[in-house]
Length: 168
Image (cartoon, rainbow, N blue to C red; front, side, top):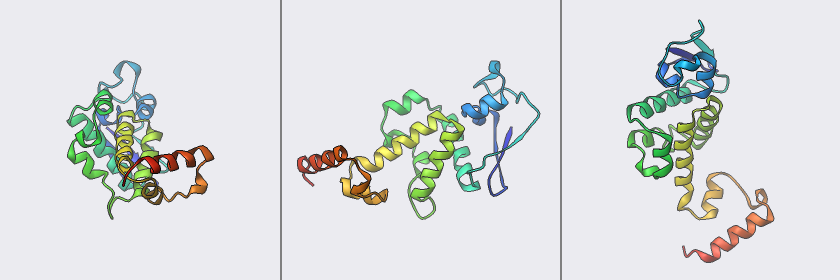
């Protein structure tokens, strides 16, 4: 077991198998022979501080790790399927709502990226793709608080071409 401490000084416990999904934690705390096997921690430290993470986000990371293991998900499985093929319980935990905002989603992406949990990054990538896939560029821009000034000339032309080709 590995205990991760949040920026707000609260803790979230990760089992060895959950922690082994993180290349960062695996490198820091587990020996090479035991990688991804749920081996015992190789050093005698059971707590690490994840500076950017609050309890809410780190708890979601832990739950997502648990679900990845429970549903025996693989990177290939995530890459070859759509977001709607991902187990519903995972989708519910990362649905944008009053409890889990867009800001929370991007903080989650940042923390998962820092922890280097590739399979969860793939899930979150599918989530963002799903969010923008059927929306008009203007809706996506509003969702992510972008303006045309944020785009290069080439990107502006691409948006204009897309709008001209698509019948809303």
